[in-house]
Length: 637
Image (tube, rainbow, N blue to C red; front, side, top):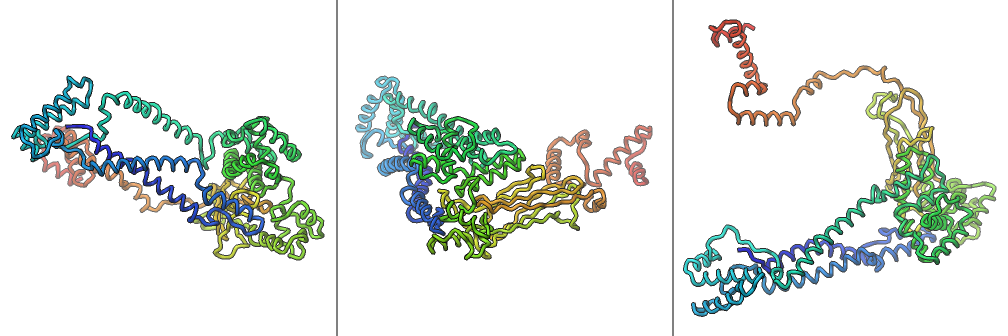
C-alpha cells in the first residue's frame, strides 16, 4: 500500500543534497587553502625580477591571495548556499537519527497501543482512530482517508487470524507482496491546510524558477564563442577591421567590444566630466574618433591613458574600469587576429599584434621601445639618442658594451643592475630559422600539389639548456602575461596563409606550417615572427619556393597485393554479411529465398551452376536427363 513516508523523504533529501554539498565544500576548502596556504608567488604571477616589478608583484599578491581571493561574487553566493544547505542537511540528519527506519506496516504503532494489548484494547483503539479519521468527518482530506484505510488494515491484522499470520510472515496483512514501496515525500503534502501552499510552491518552481534558470544559462552561454569572446565582439571586429586598419584606430575598436558595453556606460555627470578631463591629456595622441558613442569614448580615453602612461590621473573607479578592460585585452586581441585571418588581411593582423605589444608595455606608436626598460623615461632616451653610437631599439642597445650604454648615469647601482638583468636575461634575444621541405620525399624538389612544410625554429639565446621562459617583463601591465610568439606566413599581396600563436616555454621552439604547393612557378612568401609582449623584437624573413610540374614524376603503380586488398571485404561488410546469413537461416527454406541469397563458397557456386544446367536442359526438351547426366555435362565444361 502506497503512503507518503517522512523518513523515506529524509533519506532521499539527504542523498540529493549530498550531490551538491560534497563538491561545493571541496571547492570552498580548496579556495581557502589557495588563499592562505596553497598558492605561491609564482602561481599568481607575483614575480619581481627587477625593482620596477616589485610594486606590481605586491599588488598581485594582495589581490590574488588572502581574503581578496574570497571576495568574488560567485564564491560568496556559493558559500551562502552551501551553508544554508548544510543546515538543512543537519536538520534532516537529526530527524533520521530519531526516526531512522523507513516506515513499515506496524499495526501496534498505527493504533497507538502496546504489543501486549488484549483484544478489548485493540478494539477500543480502532474505534477511536476510525472515528477520528473517518472520511465523513474529514471531507476532501486525502491524508485522513489514507490513514483511515491504514487503521482498518491494522485492526484486521490484529483480529483476523489469516491477516495476522500474513503480517507476521510477510509484514503485510494482505500476504506476500511483490514489492514494498512507499512515496519518499513528506506527509504534510497531503494536509488540506497546506494544499494552497504546496500548489503555489509547485507553480513557482515549475513555471518560474526552472524556466528562468534554463533561460539564464542559455542566454549567457549562447553569447560566447571561441576563447570566451562574445559573438557580438566578433561581429563588431568584422564590421570595423579593414584591409589596412591603422594601429591608432585599434584602441577605439577594442573599446567597442561587447564585454565592455555595460561596464563603460557613464553613470553620471561626474564621471562624464572626469572622462572629458582625461581626454584633454591624451587628445593630442588620439586619432579622431570614428564613433561618438559614450561607451566608445570612455573606453578609448581610458586605453589611451594606459598607453601614454597617464594612469596616475585616473580616479579609483576609472582605474578599476581600465583594469577590467586590460584583463580581457589579450583574448580580445587574439579574437581580432582570428577575424583578420578569416579576412586574410595581413597588414591589419600585424598591426593587431603590435597593438597587443603596446598594451602590455604601456607604450604608444611614437614612443621609443627603450621605454620597456625599467626606470627609463623620455629624458634617458634623449641621452641614448644623442650618443655617438646610436641605439634606437632594444636589440641595438643590448648589443652595446655596458660602458657605452648611455642614459644610466643618474641611476643607482641597483637600478643599473636591474636594467642589465632585464636586457640580458629577461627580454628575449631570439634567432629565427626557416626551411621548406616535403615530408617523405626522395629529393628536395617541390612539385605542384605537394604537402609542403615550412619549419620555423625560434631559439631563445638568453636561456640555458633546459631552462624555461618566465613571464613577460611588463611592470605597467597590471596582470601577469606569459611570453609567446606569433608566427605568420603571408603572400606578397598581403594575404594570410597561416597565423598561429606559439606558447612553448623551451629554449628551442619548432613550429611547422603546412600548406599545399601552388601551381608551377617561383613564389616568395613573407614570414613574420612577432612577440606578443615585447616591442621591437619582431623578425621578418623571405621564404622562397619553386614549384615544378608534377607531370614529370613517374606514374605511381599500385602493387598487385595492394590492389587485391581493395577487393577484400571490410570488417563492417563481414559483420553485415554475417547478419544477413543469420537472418536467412531463420526464414523459411523456400527455393525463391535461396536464389536471393548470395553464395560465396565453391559448393554453393557449383549447386547454382547445376541448377542452371537443369533449367537449360529442360528448355531444350531434354527432360529425360537426370542429375547424373547434368553433373557429367558440368564436369566436361
